[in-house]
Image (cartoon, rainbow, N blue to C red; front, side):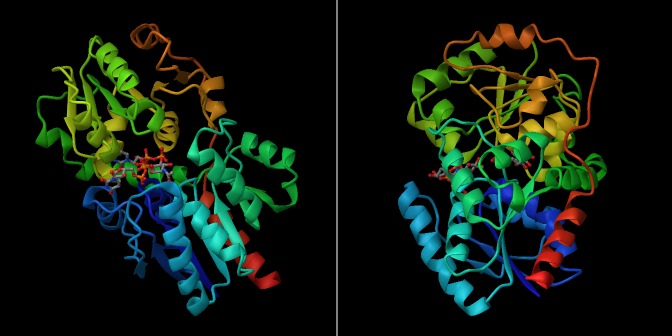
Length: 355
Ligand code: UD1
Ligand code: UDP
């Protein structure tokens, strides 16, 4: 049995780690990195820290407009699939890498397995929404992380291909959180920060960072918070801050993107998370941290329904007021399941064996 895992962007390396470890106990796995993310701290670091086998191939697609980037990946993936003749191709999440992997494989009649299927923001302006919908409809095995995802797939006529597995990020986070406390270096490197006395922020969505007036407003309002903000800056956001020549003030402490261990250490010890990331919203919930999501909607509706995650529309909403007025809910329901990779791998094996 041979599986090909297609990854290329930071959150996909995180999701790949627990699945790859287990897959390799049962079959051959080939990892193809599309090269969508390429900075050391957006790619290589994750393979090292999470002990993921080095990619067998790197397609070096790099950055670019959507069509060009996805097109390069499609062409190069197809060549490898012809040679490798995989029994299954596994894709993750909702990036351009995801849709390229799914589309190249399904056209060659290779079964496609989508990890994190069924998520919907119902906002078609997001490139990720288009990637998710198309990937789900192209895929044969739809691994749904939440009940809402299961329901979304059913509403689109995809119930038969759906498998409710829970969210794979639970596996990687629970496996590594102890290690992060032991090996994380952040608080040694930056002794001026005390555990519990800061917010952690990430931003990279185009509608927050590509428009100067929105990015300016976010940064200006957040400078009014009582606690400092630690801000590992995504390369897209760094580029925009430089391009718009924005000044961040002394409340917002910009650092390079962090490795996974230091990043989850920072999450575990923060007083709240401010983000527009999908994965970070989930991690904040699993670690029982208040999360302030700078978006108009979220795919992770369970986290907002329980009151742990607050949506703030960064244009019109008073960001500072919403964060300062937050009250921690008393109840914390578990949302994302456990032993998720086991469920996925047993499904994949079953599917390959039964055809
Ligand atoms: C991509 C995904 C997004 C995901 C995010 C995770 C798409 C359409 N978007 O967004 O869904 O949430 O990854 O982080 O697939 N850059 C570098 N070095 C890198 C990577 C990017 O400098 O290693 C810069 C380049 O200027 C590039 C820009 O960041 O143009 C955007 O990168 P890209 O991969 O196109 O989109 P992301 O915003 O990272
Ligand atoms: N992450 C990290 N270092 C950082 C920022 C994020 O290791 O400086 C991890 C984070 O723990 C999560 C994943 O990257 O597992 C989320 O990726 P990202 O926010 O880039 O993408 P999204 O989830 O929004 O697609």
